[in-house]
Amino acid sequence: MRRVYLALLILICIPVVLTFYMGYVTKKCNELKRDIWEVKTEMDFDFFAKKWEKTEKYFAISTNHAELDMVNESITKGKEYMKSGNKSSLNAELKWIEKLLSHISGLEKPTLQNIF
Amino acid sequence: MLINYIRTLILYITVVLAMRLMGKKQIGQLQPSEFVIAIMLSELATIPMQDTAIPLLYGILPIFTLMAVEIAVSVLSLKSKKARSILEGDAVIIIKHSVMQINEMKRMRYNIDDVTEELRKAGITDIRQVEYAILETNGTLSIIPKSEYRPISASDIKVNLPDEPFFFTVISDGEFDNQGIDRCGIEKEKILSIIKAKGMKSEKDVFFAAADEKGEVYLQGYKEDEIK
Image 1 (spheres, each protein chain N blue to C red):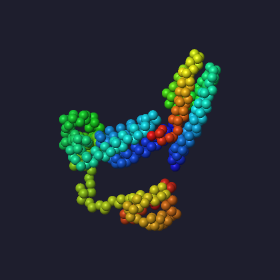
Image 2: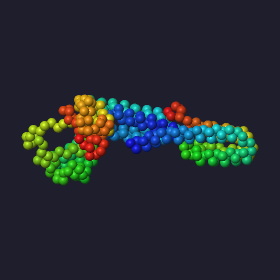
Image 3: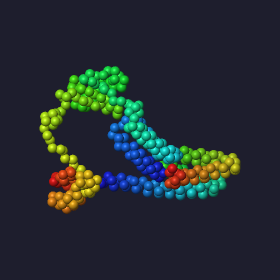
Image 4: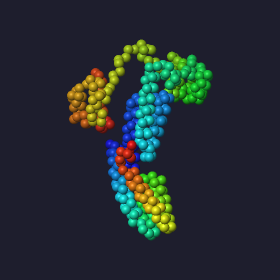
């Protein structure tokens, strides 16, 4: 019976832990989505990039690494657009980062679209 | 990851359901077509389980398609000898009257080592003891020894033996097995009275109990030496 209890415990623990993890990913993505539009200077961008780097480590546990690479790529591009003062490209890149963050948090949600 | 968890559960249930619908034969003795289906099923289930970018239906749909094909093929094999011969192949005689059939062995790519290994597995070390060895469609080699090397049966020595009683499980791990009780035709009250007569309180004290159609009951309690 001990093995049965252990199996049940694993079956229950996995969704519980993953639900908490999903909550964490959604919360962090919302924070980052809010922060991205507060980027006004190069220093702000560096601050955002550092915050993203910290979060990315935990996101890498479950999120598709290709999605994380895309955010990293966009941050690098965004920094360059800011240096060169290319506002329209910078805005497009920030919007793209926002979209990616929404996608990352959306991917974790157990919706019918995601399951099937 | 929660998505992977849910998808894994769905696919597990789907595959188990598909295997059950295909029949028990799947598990024990795989024919060539069944072997192919079993491999394909596992592959189809694992890919969408891991990759959430692939719609789950890409896995489920082919699983049910394969299941339908397999059921259709099984029915076809059942009804038509020709279809069975094409889909499952025919049994081939590898040894006939102690002589290896070289041409058949070549055709089936069955070498001498394969034959001797199978003979050893059957406890035969001398090929002269073998009347026939037949390579079945599921790949097993059936070995029929010559009559003088077969084990003696009761009919050989003309002895009448009583029918062997067949025991059905009636209590399993402290719980009544209703299917077994129905099969042997014994009443629960009778089992309970036997349990009490053996010094136990109820079925909860019985680890295993079996009964035959004549009403004979074998009991085993939870302690290994508690056999009644």
